[in-house]
Structures are given as structure tokens and as C-alpha cells.
Length: 360
Image (cartoon, rainbow, N blue to C red; front, top):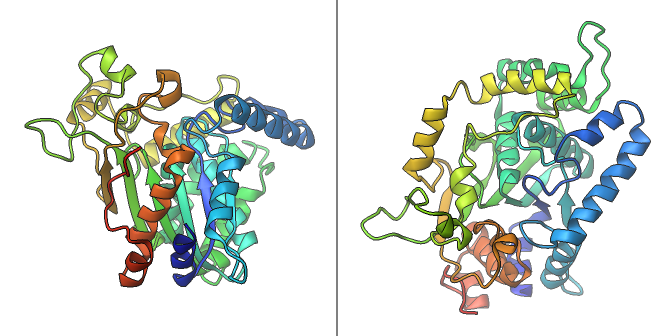
């Protein structure tokens, strides 16, 4: 594993970020955001408590934990070499456009603060954490008019209607950073690996350096390798018979709405939906799911059969939880090193030429 760290360092990676997906963050239902309007201090305490409780209950089932991040950091670093930190980025994990947009803005703010000189960063993103990063790439590459439309559509989220008072200053701060061509954000190089990310938003190639998608998939007879089929029975889903069903089913048009009491969030989410997705009928969504397309248009896609899952449905989550399991950490770290920073030196050092998971 230290050879993986050497490959990352040779490529100039300054830090690794792990980004979780939907429903495992600190405010999946948008309740704590309501509290933050009254008491920011209380809301921060509630976020820490909520995320800690989730980590204790589900551990590494579709979730990046402190233990996972520490294991990765310990294994890729060695004495006498430049230390490569592994950081967890937490976002609300709400299953709608505004939740992911807010996560993207907060991530950009964190990156500008943590890396004022820019640099190369590696991201591992699970589920809709990948779509959060898709928005990041679009914002980094956006022209002034596109940025104006995005922040105008979101305005009711961070600014009181009519009164004009801004209560989430991080949003206009990030807008100014994106507009400024000399800001730290435009000095970053992003290498992005997504795990089980449903196809939803497009990616802008001007907003990233490298992009790859790892997807749990089992090939079917007389079906192109990049396609899966609509589940024929509940039993198929319960056993993850054809791979990751959440990646297949969580595509555009399957959002949940914001908290019913959050009027401003509902308005912003509706406007963002018009901007990012357009109108999709239920029939269109169902037809898209039935198409069973696994591979996004942008980036390289690896379709991986992780083998039989010796877990209950609650543990493997319809095949969606496999990516964040500690037992696959080495395989994923080697695979990313090969995809992004490969070459003869790395292959000779690791003797790992295959992208198939090792036998358990």
C-alpha cells in the first residue's frame, strides 16, 4: 500500500478527500438547517451529534468513516516522505438538487481555504457525492453568465426574499471566488473517482484533471456489457443479483423534495431543477431506468463484479454499500493509482496489472 502512496506523491497529490453520499450526512432531512437560522452554534452541535450517531449505527455500509480515512492515511504514508493527508468532507446528504448544490458550494469554500496556492487533489466520492462533484466541475468551468444563473436560481436559499438579507454568506463568497480568475479555486487540479454514482448531472472536462467511475456490475447474457436490466423481482434487488441497483435507480428525476417547512429551500430547489435537469415526466424517468445505462458520457468507467455478497440487504444496500467497505480499500487505492497515476514504475512496484478484485 505504501507503493500506492508513492504513486500519489509522485503525481503531486496534496490531499485526498472522501465524500459520502445521500442519507448518511449530518442533515439528510433538512431539519438542522432550520435550526441554524435561529442558532448557528446549536446547529453545529446537532450536526456533529447526527453524523456521529449515523457512523456508529451504519459504520462503513455506504459510508466513509473516521476509521476508514485513518486506515487509508496510515497505509499510504511512510516515515521520511511527504505526508499525504486524508480528509472527510461532510455535507447534508439531502436527496435533491439544493442539497447537492449547497454541498458543492461548501466544498469549494473549504478547498479555497485549505489550499490557497492551489494544487492537485484526489477525491473518492460515493453515490450522490459524485454528483456533488459534478456540480463542482461545472462551477469551476462556468462562464460568468452560467454562474449568474446558478446563483440567481439558488438565491432564496442564502438570501431572504424581499428583505435581501444574506444569512448564508458562504454562498456569495464562493461566487466571488469563482468569478475571480486568480482565486485559489482556479489553481486546483481535481482527480475524481466516483463509486456507484447514479447518472444525473453532466461533467465539465474543464473543471477536472482526471475522472473515473467504479460501478458494481454483473454482465447479463445477450446484453451489452455497459447495460443492465430493470429488476425482474424483489429477490434480485435483495440479493444484488445484477450489481448496484441504487446506481441504476437513482438517476435524474428521482429526487425527494426539501423539508416541507423549508419554503425558501423548496423555491430554490425548484429553480435549480429547471436549470440543472429540466422537466422530466414519470414516464421518461421510468424509461431511462429501464434503459439500464451504467456508464456516464464523461470519464472512464470500470464495471466491476465484486463477487457474491455475504451480507444481508441492510448491510449491502442493494449492492450500493460495497464500495466503502474496508476490505476493498487496498483494491480501490491500487485501481485509482493505476488509472490516474499509472505507468511502468507503479506497475513494477505493485505487480498489480489487473483491475479485477482479488479473490476473498
